Image (cartoon, rainbow, N blue to C red; front, side):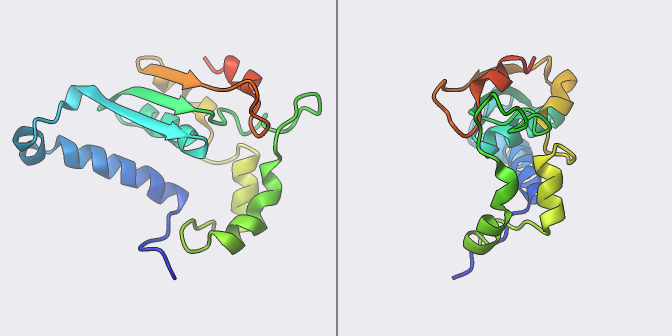
Length: 154
């Protein structure tokens, strides 16, 4: 069974931006008492990375909660002293098992993401995040993304 729509990275970002615009529209905002100045974006894991990226680009988002994100793909799983899951080997798994929901165009594209050579690298947007209220939460026992990498995000 195929999902209603395939999500690609740009589509994930655009869907969030569209949702913010939708809830900001006068009809919705006024009829449903949407507090447009109080938009908070929440993301977990990869979604935590996406939330930081979108929050950096979207002025209407004032607050971000990011749980266990990768904040710098260029450093992720590169230090042998810090145990982390190497996502570069997951392309085949995602392409095979999640093809109905997540679309990765090519192994090259996935490699670029894993190496921090794509738009999906939150550390590249730190300057744009300075005026946002951000709560970054990360557990010390996370074996996939080491919390130490996020301690120096700002």
